[in-house]
Image 1 (cartoon, rainbow, N blue to C red):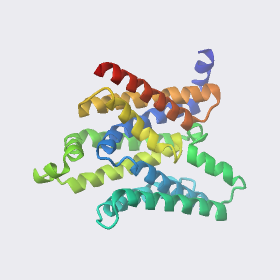
Image 2: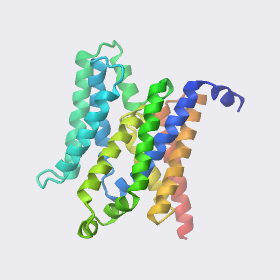
Image 3: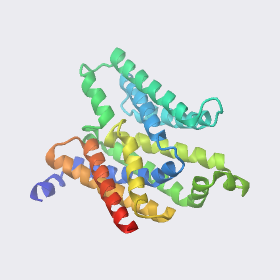
Length: 277
């Protein structure tokens, strides 16, 4: 405890905790929608797109890589949604096509044009988020706070519409709801969350941050609202636990957070089984 209190005095630890809580909260809210719409792997596909965009930003030596990563990821989310609605290319095939292509393209760019001599270290850090969460600047923190506030505001403002589109898109359309517009809104928000989460858990582990809290909550609760609230609580607690354990034990931040999510899922499965009996 003394060691933890000593670490909490450092600004980089405070930044990591703030950003970690905000990202975990945002990702868990929309993770429930993705799981229920059976579109969970959109996070995986967009994370690979973000990896390719980060590779481009690194080659260009941009001081603020968000200027490239965020627009490219948002545009890819829109294209992914449109392509997934194409009868010739189904949703899962579109995700696989975009994710694998972006991942290969990003690594190729880093291998050919990266100014750094430690390509393997850069790739590992980007994919697994080993130390980036502990090197955040004031600008990164305020950007995360601003984007997280926008995501939370949109979720609260359009909660009823998101609920309707999630459970019965056909009925929502028949009742006058513009389902296509709200699907587009969900895709754009997920893209923003993916970009923010790259600093927390890395490209390859983002899907776990989005999916595990939702699945854990569904083991115990049944209503959409209770699952959403429980998912948010589980995600925030696991993020805090993962960051603190990582700082104290020196383990990779992203992997530790995902391990905490997996442990929470196992506990929720046990609790759900006991409750059903």
